[in-house]
Length: 248
Image 1 (spheres, one colour):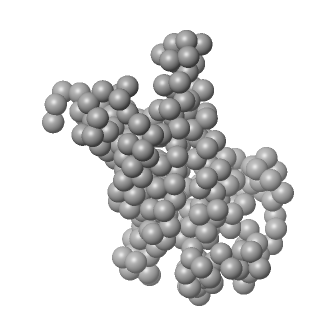
Image 2 (cartoon, rainbow, N blue to C red; image 1 turned 135 degrees about the vertical axis):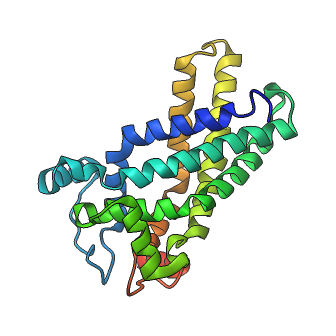
């Protein structure tokens, strides 16, 4: 490994962990909103009217610490998923194209999809635990490793990789949209002459790609969250069954 080839992996992981810590309450509110309304489950009641209402109600009823339920597996997920995703994306691009200015949209999309699928598949167990801890809040007791072992003992290896196909699909959409949008936005901002290669350009590019990725992946993310959160009696026998119940 060359002196610089490790940098995308390390910096990508650090950036992902930092972002996760800063936005975790919003992510928790998203998960609660996605699981509410499940027919035949404890989440059937519609408790939250939106993101801000969910955050305020969770903090008031369950305590401020509940807003960070599942933070440990989320950080572990980002340390693995984020590191592999961004590092693999950059490495694949350098294999196909020598210079950043020669990159095309197709190159970025292909590299992004491959990087997202590989990284999300590896990190799927941390995603399962994070979603369950976010959905249950303070009802889940014990350490992160204790809950991992509990899922494994009750549901086996399949439980840890539940919803992995949807996770891979979501990651393919997110990374396939986010990273190319980021690169293309940054490239055009710099080439236009309106902004230089500085922190403001990176912020605008990151904001744009994050918004694009969230909009593109949200339907798959809802299905993935509900399937990962189910245990015991399965409400959904597969992706199609979950989609049909959601739109019914």
